[in-house]
Length: 267
Image (cartoon, rainbow, N blue to C red; front, side, top):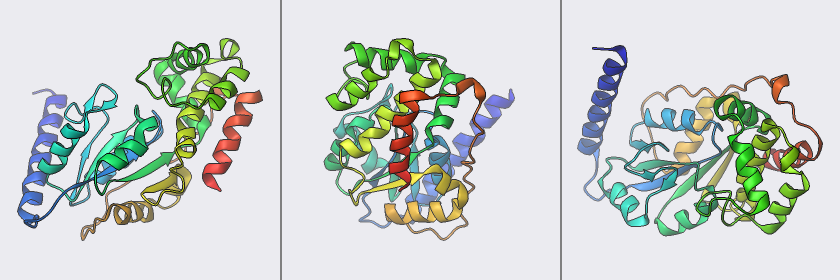
């Protein structure tokens, strides 16, 4: 058996054991509620979701879980409600990357839902995005600026015209892939404020430097926000910052926009 197959078998066995234990521990009247882990691609949400999966009475559906997501989009509310009903946990984590523009609606639809909005410094995100996807983010930003963005995505609907104008003012046709990735971070993170979720008590905003400084305190805070108590030692959570690369240096109007938004996040 290849090592990949053995690793998958161990993961499936671990998940089955966890599910059985949580079903056995569940009170008769338990109703699971959603905990949205929101962020940008390459923003560190995967590490937080993995750490939360190691916590008792928490179940996680990552952004690549077909049961909860159709491509990058969350499945319809009735499907998600069925998952919440069937999943053996107090809190069911849903990793939201493609639907950041719909977080307010998801919170409204699912009773008792909470969200954690994880924000990684934009230069780190831009570096990781370019390394993983080349100029994909730049092409998405160019489509937003010229009005040809995909109608179902975070860069296609509900983007305020003021934000679109800011993007156009940066002249996306002349930008580098890194600058395009930085603007992608800017547009997606802006939804935290344009949807007025920064002041919503259901939403916990976490800049990743805060997470990296004290991972245990962060997980404790996230679990408390989700209404989950845990008796076991908390799992590891590594969101250490990555050093900026000269290859993705970004300046000018793009850096000014992103720096201003980052300052607002950490204020």
